[in-house]
Length: 262
Image (cartoon, rainbow, N blue to C red; front, side, top):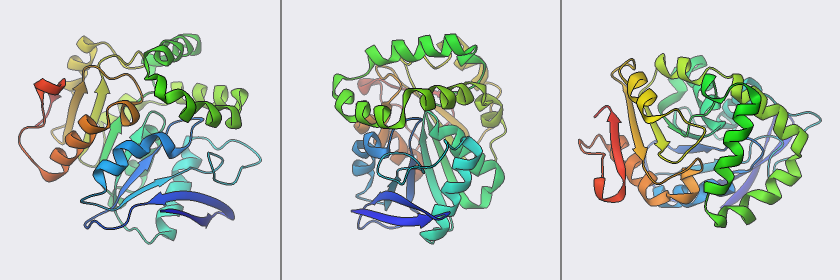
């Protein structure tokens, strides 16, 4: 169901599923794009839990801003939206830039985040300098499903290439790895095996050894960056198993591999 609410004096568009129980799942999209591409995964998770998919301030069908909000300001807006929806605690599922936003909320207000799911957590040294990150982004474009083009292109054009470049530059400077290593809440990181914005498998294994016990890392081997759109069945299954505390998250037959954790 499509709805609107007012946050910080501006109209915010969001989609909310009907039915389900337990703590809601709130999906947080990446830079320059609305929450539309997150819907395939959200729909699969909606049978058991209420799912909320907002367009962050200035994105999609939400009211435009005079200037582009950075990651900390977007995190504040997300918390303000949760307040308006009377959601005291939620499971946050971020993709790309949505991961730093989720990490910001978890570090600032861990009591508001029941669990955190980081899908393709971009940002940090892996994407620096900017020209390297832009090269990785260009490579990812050709690795994504062609079905993503009509979903993403109108959003990117509306957001504007200059705004997108500025925000992507901020994303490359965000210390995602450091924040993940010190995450205060149970966290699931889901990586795509074909995602050029992610570290090499060897580096992922090395970092995995440094992570606290409440962090689980899974790889979907055939996925690129926009896993929520391209591999919704695999991702929804991983998230559901993890939230339910099932022992076996890996599904070798579908290319889902456990790197660290349960």
